[in-house]
Image 1: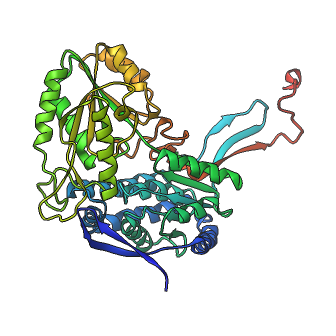
Image 2 (image 1 turned 180 degrees about the vertical axis):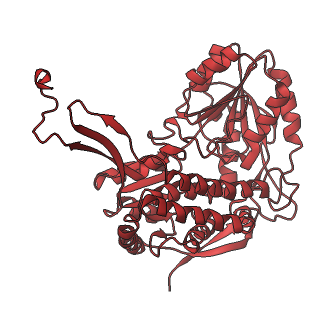
Image 3 (image 1 turned 90 degrees about the vertical axis):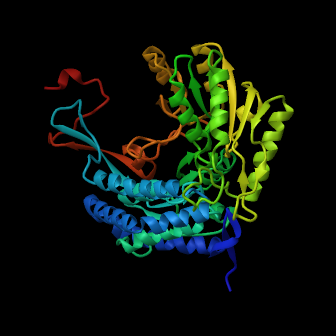
Length: 482
């Protein structure tokens, strides 16, 4: 009998959401074989026909939205409104990617020779391996699977062991909508399963979302076994700059949502608040007051503002980081400890936490917490704010609150992140714009938007010479061209 593991509710860990099989390298081999066989005929379908299947998946997800949102809340711990947003993002991605099926598939270029035609087109890579996290257990698979399918690939996906049923049900919706048998395969388990998928010779591309440390291992292992496209979406340590002319009412709303939404468990969460000294005292007072009113508890209860973090191990890790910050001299203004929630025995809850007095080199400002923790830094000028925000190995998202259009325009150019918000928090990316970051946040690929296809397809340049004679490009023959 196959071994299994339990996926549990982080708010009530005694509640088993699902028991899933622990797959092996042999199961990965089988999944890749199925995907390879199904991909051959799928790639022969016209691209608009593939798009129609993806559009139908969107319809199935729409019909099942409430059911899937409930599952996301129970398995990943998101409050219901955020869980519904997770599913809606997948629905929106289905509609967007389906529309891309009738968009340009390449570009036409003038050639330097007469009677010669040049253009580019895109081709599938074959089978794509995907390793996805638990924090967006429906949305992130959609970011990867839909573009990969549109490009004509087969898929093998390994979801996080902390939210496997969400991915399982998402793929079930794809199959219900008409995705061919064997085209999308799910393998479950732990790091060894992801490693087997990464190094499988039949997998031509790997798409990974997770930590920097694991991403480095994935990239290294993938490239050792042969040429693969490797796309990495890694961590963030996102800064919100608040200038002295900012609308503080708007700022406070943004800080609360950016820092404590999804319990701080977004790669784009606002984890550094870089505030001008002229307004920092008032801002801290107002943010701390609002954060103290947040309701922490059962994510299925409509009045809950902040749900659990994903595991008890996460609680311990977050608490250790906060204690380290305090030991370095940062002042604990709010929270700073695990808490219990009514009706959630043993739940993995951590109080919304605010620390002040941080500096650029503080432990808490240089390391990703992935929890409801906000570090506040004081600056004296716009230039210092930009330097402080950029002084980080990550480069995913940043934001600035200001009424000065000159500061806003300079910030969007000078902030070294893949995403920049003006007068909005660091979270809230939309699926029709590219998503990804600079520096250690990724390796140059972008998900979503029209660029989402790039990590799942290869560009082919095509030349058609209808002159009826040999023409030599890159040869000094200008005088001979009629």
